Amino acid sequence: MFVIGLIALALFLIGTVALLSFSGPTPDEGAARSQERTKAYAELQAENKMRLETFAWADKAKGSVQIPIDLAIQLTLPRLQNKQPTPADPIIVAAQVAAPEPAASPEAGATPSAEPIAAEPAASEPTPMPATP
Image (tube, rainbow, N blue to C red; front, side):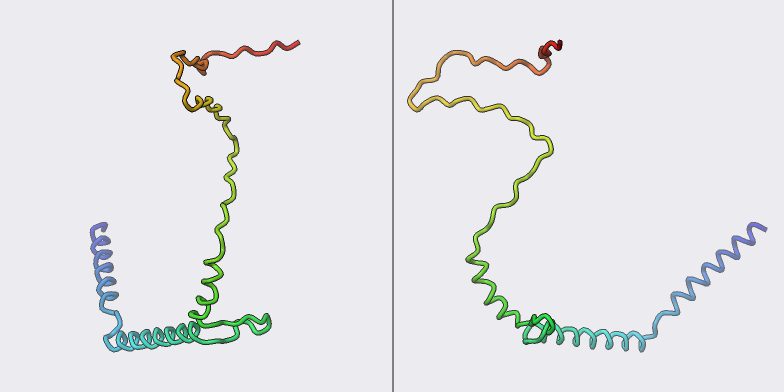
């Protein structure tokens, strides 16, 4: 009984795949859809070209207009070229670590001394805590 069910299921899947693979669009439908897409693309390009090259009202109620892109570039470019860059906002770090102060540099013409520099105590050494009353 189980074997018959598997065979029936396999035949059903093979039939479904065959039906779906042969039920695609006919060549005439594909050509018609291709022509529709080509026409829609040409209309979109024409509309975009018109918007980039003509004057029109963008929002008449607000008084905003659309101008040709070449004129917009000519009007905007000098203003941007004359504008000085502004510094970025400072970076805020949640917990700033205090950096050790740099050692004083020797004066010009002075010779460095041969005295050893005292090392700071290692971090593993315990620091004494103040006494509490």
